[in-house]
Length: 188
Length: 126
Image (cartoon, one colour):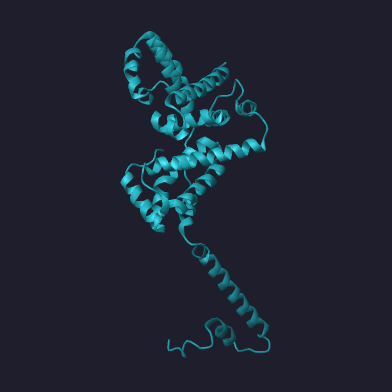
């Protein structure tokens, strides 16, 4: 799901939200909740965490709307808020577990990889992709989610991640190379 | 050299032309139809298909409604449950009070008076 078009409407809604218009806020949530949840879910890999994080992000929208200036698209700004919250979440996770990410991924994939005779159903494959994405280094995962799933332009994704477009390409290549390797191993 | 760059782009952006940076699309057009280019894209396409299997989260309307309700002041968010709780407490007290006095006072109007207040419907002109 992509952010809806009509930036002018978002700017008008944000101006109203800045004046504590609850109806405008509800409209803004209605327009942006779906894609925000999709993005966050792909980043974090767990639905409940994603829902909590999206709620926190919208709370920040409500609290910060009066100070918001329409320099960029509302969706770009919300992407940044969500991305920063995801990074905070990853740091919290890393602090809670000393387990290296790649080992964690290998275990998860082993758990979710069906036996050779077993037919890989769509749901199983989806679970594998979820686990594979969740196991990628955070910046590679963010680059893939932003460029592949969210279909942001290279310039937008690079600006969001705070890297050059060349560095973004490198993150994408490494992320996809890791997925390709796992995929080959799975097929063999 | 160009084929090397074509390979780099397919490794980063996948097999679909629309995902490639605009400035690299002429390169895509040049090699996609060649034997070597097609093989490179087919490899990238496997990763694309793998990524495509990841389902998109379907939003829960109830949860979205809760988020939209963040804008309401706390007293409004909790006013309905609080009013219901208060009404239940008053009703419970009235019923309990009426039952406790039921044996001594057979006047069933006690409960009605407790529920309606000190005045009857006739007294308030209804």
